[in-house]
Image (cartoon, rainbow, N blue to C red; front, side, top):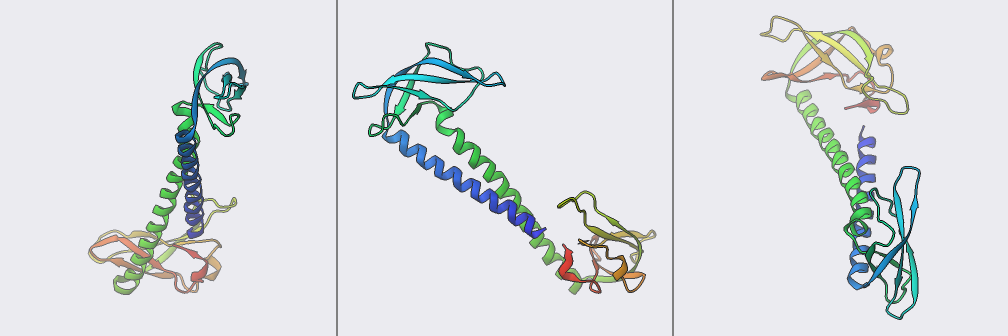
Length: 227
């Protein structure tokens, strides 16, 4: 799972960086652009009922241009609407409608998607690191009890490349409790059943909170286990 969380965080960071670059480009463009009034002369519609306007405008040298907006919206502009056009004085064909949508849409999309995925991936990595520290503490300091292996099943809540990992279920009675608890092992990307050497596994748990536990699968290949 570390690879999955790392990929999510990495892609999120990439999208967030692209959003920041687009924001910087837009801020620079609008800060140095000239403004003029344009007129909507045509509307290009798509199959979803949205439309993007073609806007005629005249630059500071008196030359006529037509800006074909790539942003479709609904409701859209109407023919004859007057809009503010921002254009590069050195390249007057480089223009856009000066509106909040044109200023913030692409940076917002890339930055928003990137920030969300960066947070999700980072939280996943932090939780995994915390769980690894908890497992190390339980194996070193926790109380131990032998638990009987009951079932070995696939955890279908997780699928990677149409495969689900395996988990070992075992039961044991914790001292001071009348009924047996069920403990679940870490996840494995192979069936660990044939590799078990005995019908029981050692469970290390926190005596103050037995729900904090780890099934000691040290007899199995730890490099193929997922925390």
